[in-house]
Length: 239
Image (tube, rainbow, N blue to C red; front, side, top):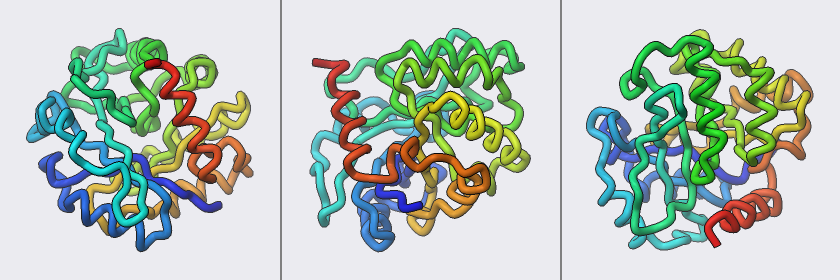
C-alpha cells in the first residue's frame, strides 16, 4: 500500500520534537510523498507554542519543493464532553487532529469518560482526524463510537508510532481497524513523527492494516485523488 501524505508531524516548536519544518519537508520529499502536515501540539502540553504560532503559519507557502504543506495542529481533548483546547483563530487551519493525552484531560479517563469524549469530538466540525485513539489507558466503546466517526466524516488515524512509543496499544489499534473495516469508516495512516527520520515511515501501521485485508479504498491518504476529495469536503464546512 502506498501512502502519499503524512498528516501528523511535529517540529521543534512542540518542545519535545527535534526537527524543523523544512527538515520534515525534505524528509517527505525523500520518502516520495505528495504532502506533509505540520501539526504541533497546542494548549496544556508542556512547552507547546501558543495561538500566535499557529496564526503565523499563514506565512508558510502552500507548497515547498513540490511538497504540499498542510498547516495544522494537534489539539488536546480536555474533558469527557469532548471539548478541545483549540482557541478561536484569525485563520482557518488546514488540518486539525484531536487526541487524548494524560496531562490535559480533566478527571478520570475510564471507558465511559473516553466514550463520551469521543462522541463529543465527533460533533466538532473543526476536527479532521481522530488521533491515536488506540492508546492504552484510553480505551472507549469502539463498536458504538466508530460508526459515529464515519457518519460525521472524521478520519480515524492508524498511527505508526503507537506500535513503538505507546507500548501495549497495538491490540487496541487492531480492534479499531477491524471495526472501521466492518462499518466502512475511512482511516488515515500517519507517522506521528517527532524527528524528521520518522516522516513517511508507516511500516507498522501498514502491516496492521494488511494483516486484516483492510480495503485500500478506505485509506484516504493512499491516493492523491481521494485525499483532495476529502480536503474539498472539509473546506465546504466553512463556506
